[in-house]
Length: 190
Image (cartoon, rainbow, N blue to C red; front, side, top):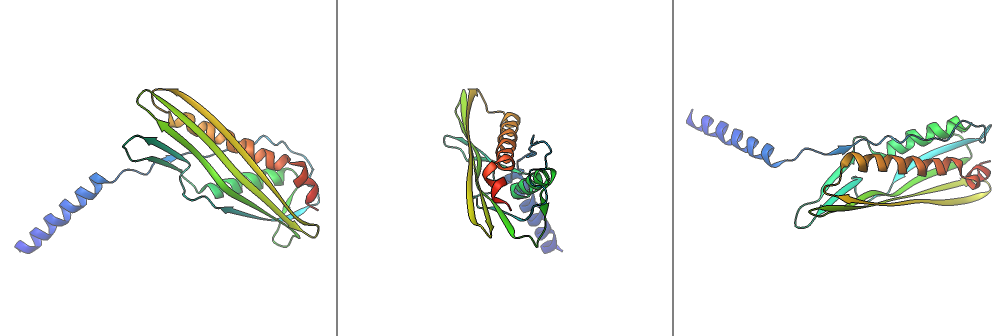
C-alpha cells in the first residue's frame, strides 16, 4: 500500500514538474492573399506540380535576445502545404491544369522563409528573407528560376508578433504572385 502511494506521489510530482518546465508551442498564422487575378495565360496547358521544403528548421520567426534562448514561432500548418495550396489555386485560376500525367513537371523548392529578429532592451530589428526556386522540366529542357524577397524593419521596444506575421504573409504573397506572373515560366510551360 505504501509503495503504491509513493509511486503515485512520484508520478504526480514528475508530471507537474514536466508541465511547469515546458513552454507552449508558439504559432503564427500563415495565410498569403495572392492578387494574381484571373487570366487564360496557361489555357490548355498541363503540369505536374511538386513542392519541397529544404529549410533547415520548421520555424518562420526567431526572436533572439542576448543571453536568452531564442523564441521560435512556426506556422500552424506546414509552410510547404500552405505554399502548395496558394500557388496551385492561383495557377489554376490562370488556366493551368494540374494532372499527374502531364509532360511539364514543375517543382517549387522553398530554400528559406525566415524572419530573424534581434531584440534589445529598448528596440528591435528584423530581417526577413524568402528564397524559392522553380524548376521546370519538359521536352524543351530544364528552366530554373530563383525568386527572392528581402525585407528589413525596426522599431522601438518589443517586436510585435502580429506585425511580423502580417509582414511575412505580405512578402509570401508577393513572392508567389511573382511566380504566377513570371513570363519566362509562362512561355516555358508548353
